Length: 96
Image (cartoon, rainbow, N blue to C red; front, side, top):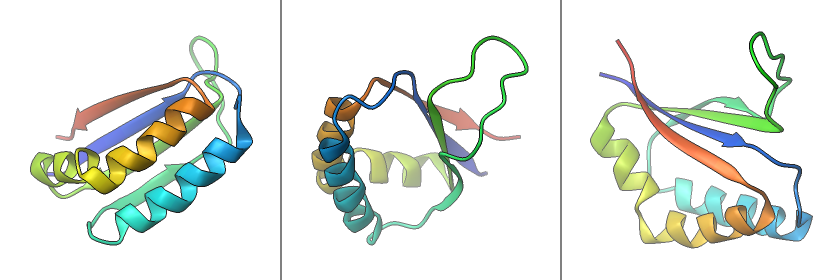
């Protein structure tokens, strides 16, 4: 069953250089894993509440695959740069 990882950027980017470093390292970390980006900072329209600053939605084949990617040493190293760049929330979502 597919699962999804949703990352919500809740603030404006504080440090563009850190976000750029994250993008580079996260791209390298993704090479060893299989997932499909569904939304990557596209236009966001709030239909309830306030719109976040940005959203990323990734689809994985299984919860195990999602957690293997997220907790991998290569992604965790990239993640540190993302968290320095802006405030984020990350969620693991189970599909139907």
